[in-house]
Image 1: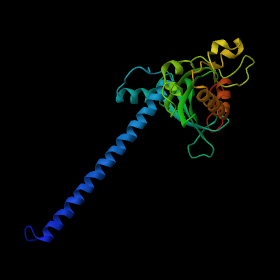
Image 2 (image 1 turned 90 degrees about the horizontal axis):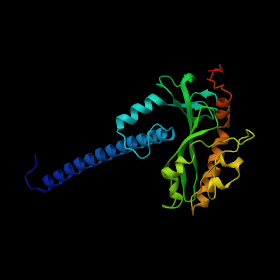
Image 3 (image 1 turned 120 degrees about the vertical axis):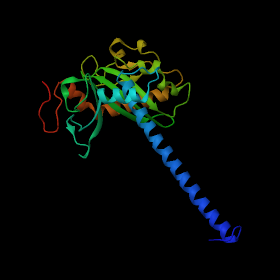
Image 4 (image 1 turned 30 degrees about the vertical axis):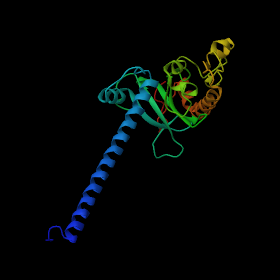
Length: 249
């Protein structure tokens, strides 16, 4: 074809080598991108399960364990501001996750829902805070909280990802003693120092991270106001599918 060591031979060899290297780099990049996407999807499931109280934040779990538990206990649905189950393509729908007490074979099987999870995406001091806030099926009691992404300062605002802070949310209420919506707030100090009527609506603050606590409080309140229609349907036991038929009394 080409005389060995000729200019054409060297050029052809270099061209083939560059094409092969390019293909290998592309394949490696594609593989890394797919693996990163898989890891992100798995991390999302882990944090949803943590918020739901179905896995321990201090424990390590295998991928198969997480996927199996998620498929059995968590169902992603879409709702409108009034709390009706909608199609993903419908306008103004919001993400919501049901926590099933038994196998979640049907996302619209409302008879075994033990709670629900609201995505939290809000401003922090240095960037966005992403997490999940889980509720019992009474529509007012928090069952768990999980933060999976933030840019807060380690040792200060970054403590929002610590187990001690997230456990503060369990058992707190979004209604006050007069059954009015007030959300959940982060206190400037200890929630126990507040009046007895406020203690159920606040969690302990983080020393040196007042602004992080303020932004998180505001973000949670703004989000829960959007989902208040969902919480009301749970409080009234009138969760409905898109066709408007009551799912349970």
